[in-house]
Each structure stands twice: as C-alpha cells, then as structure tokens.
Amino acid sequence: MKIDNSLTAKSLKPAVKRLFEVAAKKTVALDRRWKISDGAPVFTAAGKYTARAWTQWTQGFQYGNALLCFDVTGDRKLLDIGRTHTLCDMAEHITHTGVHDHGFNNLSTYGQLRRLMLEKKIPHNDWEMRFYELAIKCSGAVQAARWTQLPDGMGFIHSFNGPHSLFIDTMRTIRICGLAHKLGHALLSEQDEKVNLLHRALTHAATTARYNVYYGEGRDSYDLPALRGRSVHEAIFNTVSGAFRCPSTQQGYSPFSTWTRGLAWAMLGFAEELEFVRTLPDDEFGRGVMPRRKALTMLEKAAKATCDFYINQGAAADGICYWDTGAPNLHKLGDWQDRPAEPYNDFEPVDASASAIGAQGLIRLGVALKNEKYLNAGLTVARRLMEDDYLSLSPDHEGILLHSIYHRPNGWDYKARGSKIPAGESSMWGDYHLLELGLLVWKMAEGKYYTFF
Image (cartoon, rainbow, N blue to C red):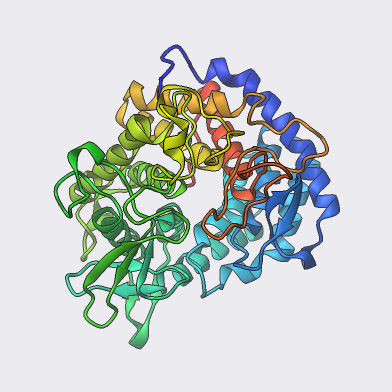
C-alpha cells in the first residue's frame, strides 16, 4: 500500500464527523425496524439487514453502534437505544458457553457503557457500574472456561467448532478475560481451583502467535521470509495427545493463503493486548503468569509481523484489501497491489470490514511503538474507508460501511443481479469497527485516547 505521511488525526476530523452523522441516522432507523425476535442482524442483502442462523455474535455490535454514535454526537436517543437493549437483551450472551465471541458481544455493550460512565459521559451510579462490571467478569470467566490444555503448558480458548479448533478471531475477543482480571475476577474450576484470567489470555495469545501466525522462519514449506506475517484462520490439534496437526480455514480460500479478516483480527488483537499488558503493574505477572518481558516480546513480534504483511502484501495501493490474498481469481486483476482496490470488479470481492479492523490495529501499534509508519498507514486506510466509495450514504441502504464479505466459500454474501461477485453490502461487524476506528481517530484529534480497559 502507499502510505500518506501527511495525514493526522486532526485532518480526518471532518470525515469522522460526517461518518457519525450518517451512522447515527442509520442506527436509529434500523432499531425502529428490527425486532429482537428476528435474532441478530448480520449482513445486508440488497441494502437491508438480514439475520443468519449461525451464532448471534453480532448482537453486541448492533447496540454498540448506538453507544459509539452517542459518544461522538451526544444524542441521548442513541444512548437510550444502546443502554436499554444492553439491559434487556444481552444477558444470554454473558453466559453463552458455546462461543468464543464474548469480547465481541459484551465489551461492545457492557464494556462501552462502563467506559462512558468512567469518562463521565453518562451519570455515575454504583449499582449500574457494578452491574456492567459483573457482566464483564462473568463473561470473561465463561470465555476462559472454553479451554483446551496442551501438554507443553500452552493452551487456547477453543472456537465453536470444538476443542480441537483455535481461531485467530479470538485474539480480538480475549480482551474481556484481561478486563475481567483487572476487575479482580478469577474463574473457579473443579475443587475450587482458581484460574488466573490474565494467564489464560496471555497463554491463548502465545499459542495463537505460535500456530496461527507465520514469521518466515521455516516452520513448514510455505513459511517463507517473503511471506512473514501471513496468518491462518484456524489451527487444528489432536485433543487426545495435544499435538498440532495442521493449519485450516473456515472462511478463507486455503490454509496456505491469508484470509484478510483473520489477519486483521490478529493485527488488532495483538496490538491491543500489547497496549493492555504495558499498563499492568509488575505484581500481576507472578504466580505462574507469563513474565511481562516475555509477554510483551511475543505480542510485539506478532503485531509487527501481521501489520507488516498487511502493508506490504495484504492491501491494494489505497490500503483496502481483497477478501483473501490467495483468492483463486485474484491474478485476473493483474497488478492489483499497484492500484486502488476495485470493489465492482468481475473476479474477487473486496472486504472493507477487514480493512476497518486492520486500520485500528495499525494505529494502535503505531501509538504503542511511537512508529509513524504504522500510524500513518492506519490513518491512510481510515481516510479511504470514510470516502464516498465505502461510506454508505444512501438512506435506503441500512449499512454504514460498504463492500463487506462474510463467508465467501459458503456463498452467503449477496450478489446483485448481473454481478459476478458480492459488492456494495454491509456487515454489522464492519459497521461497528468502522465506528470504533472513527471514535479512536476522533479521540486522538482531541488529544485523548480510547481503549477497552
């Protein structure tokens, strides 16, 4: 990608303001139309949000969108939407034992409300703060209980596919384990064994960094220096012996190409955990928890590798990525990395949701390392996503961020009549992460900063 080194957060503030003006109207309109009995809105078809009976992993993004919009606009109607739905409709997600998605659903809702209260954006009262923090504690513990122990002391929070399956997506959700730990919570297991949630989060991160990220160190025939930083969606383990068996993928093209949304989850997840671990006092790293220096080294190595791969190989010239770097017809686009991404081509779809997630990772890594390359790369992607080609300006389209892809191999994404590929549609996670990216830039423009903790 071609990085614009002239950008600053302040220079993007007008674009962010427009983003939230557009998003606020769409969020209110969707809330009026959508019924809780419809399930969770997942992605649009012909511009209208639809559900998908897979898991309800996007429910928190729907209500989180309202809370993010309130933070920037101050419109209490949006606060009421996000707060009321969180209080009334999110409880089942706290105790959902069947998914790894706790940091998605519950930090987007309970976590955002807690943050708004701490920042004095909403009035403080003890019972409500305790309610939000109890939800976070319970959710973090439930997530941590989805544990596959490996014989070498490693282990991971397994995906909804089962105890053999390590998803790279979970790098963005384990932050709820970290926050639950920071709030003083632990998971009690058999015979009252106390499980340290920070230990679980860091061990999961280390296992992900080892098996889902490649460093050009010759791990297998495809782990080449030229491909340093590529990621794999899923790592498969033998649950009897604990042995690693193979890379795999659910939503990417192959285990030996890079599904870009998985790459983006890693970019943001590792960068965000790096920020978090840096804030913890030294005494948090005793009693069997990974040493601070080891944790920071591991997180920085993985964050830099994945962000470098995105910049050097994952994105087109304008910083927007296609859905998979090895997509079978990508070669038909010729030198696609040397020109802006083309959402309406005939061969392979763009995934702007991956770019929105990855942009936040780039910015956070740039801030953490005081590195202008990563910071400016993230701002370059953010600016592009807020331009007319990607921001959904039509009031008849319910989405906010255009050109999002959900599950290309399964063919779930809507294709308009006459189109050879999915294009022009939105997803709830894409909308949320564009707004979260916008909030981060907005805060930075005002000399502040936004974190989950």
